[in-house]
Image 1 (tube, rainbow, N blue to C red):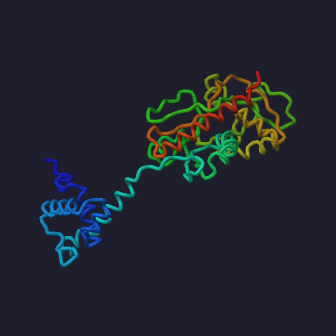
Image 2 (image 1 turned 90 degrees about the vertical axis):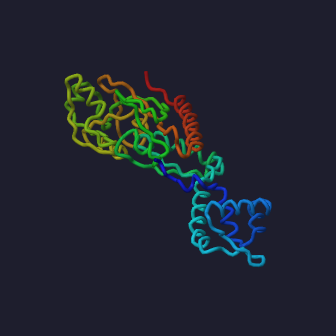
Image 3 (image 1 turned 120 degrees about the vertical axis):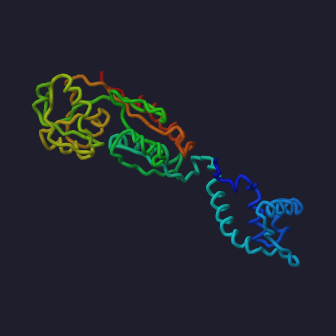
Length: 313
């Protein structure tokens, strides 16, 4: 027989605020005023609680309601439980971008942060100046476990061949791009033979053993020579600029880095499917209004980016 919460099933929980108010005020009238009840309704509620708990709970001495020994023992626990429930059951505040001070936890890689956040912060400094972010590197994609646990609100990641759709996650395709190859500025051509005989720098944001390009080369019966693996993209172009290393990188990032480092950009000398930057969120996010609003802003930015960034034919 299931006896879980057997006492609570017998008790009208609406009576607990009545007990708490009478205990604090030692007055039926003042307790009734606090609870917006009539004194007769409060007295009736107190009578029901006395019957349920089989104790007089309060004795009238003059104009004061004095607690019984049992009431004194109950009072701290009831007050603590009411405070906890009141705090936990407070409705989520309506999200107002202009005044919100919410902090969103977002999983990123160097590239997704580089690709998205400069334009996003420019947009939000007027639209949501109090909104803040904690950007977190995670050792895998698409941060499914952390999203499901509510540890992060959004994850910025990549599509990849063979991706399995996660029914608990919402996915938004934010930006499409292709891989290119960067080299030091003195290189003038890049054939497939050149590519295969060169040494390579590879960015592995999740410490993956094999990237998309290596899977494609393997399917062609080819391999490349990897000299350096690094989880960070930001230092990589500068290493390439000072060495004979080659690096495959999204075109968007390559064109940005070319403004800061002496590098050349070449088409990838074999076919690899393009990829999408995706925004992942949990369908039952604890910050649904804030994450929904932010995703809408990101989609507007994606439209702007598609218009300004056209891949060469």
